[in-house]
Image (cartoon, rainbow, N blue to C red; front, side):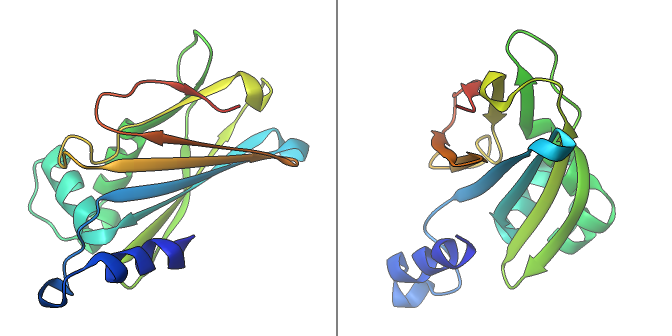
Length: 161
């Protein structure tokens, strides 16, 4: 999916805008690991967009790498990606790492869950406060079951089913 996301940047870009990308999006993959009763999230974002949103959130002027090193990027991410069973408080997500590949960042988040994934809801407001056209795609997997949902500005909680 990372190559698809990066490829979309160059396919839709004008030659004079090769360094900028005309699309604002993130892709989150959610897996339920039955044996460990764990949700694992992989969140991919464009580094420059994420850096701008996280800097605004933390009221700093640091670059993407500085925001990550200082943990400010993670606090922004945790404030904007939330998972929760229906009608209960959000489940605590913790970092399991971050990597950078070119202009992309990939965050890993984990959460212990005590309910089946079909009773869990997710909200993703990453960068929607910054870009009017921001789209956050969330794909989930549990065994052979797969589901996809899309979040835009103003969207709330959506089922993981």
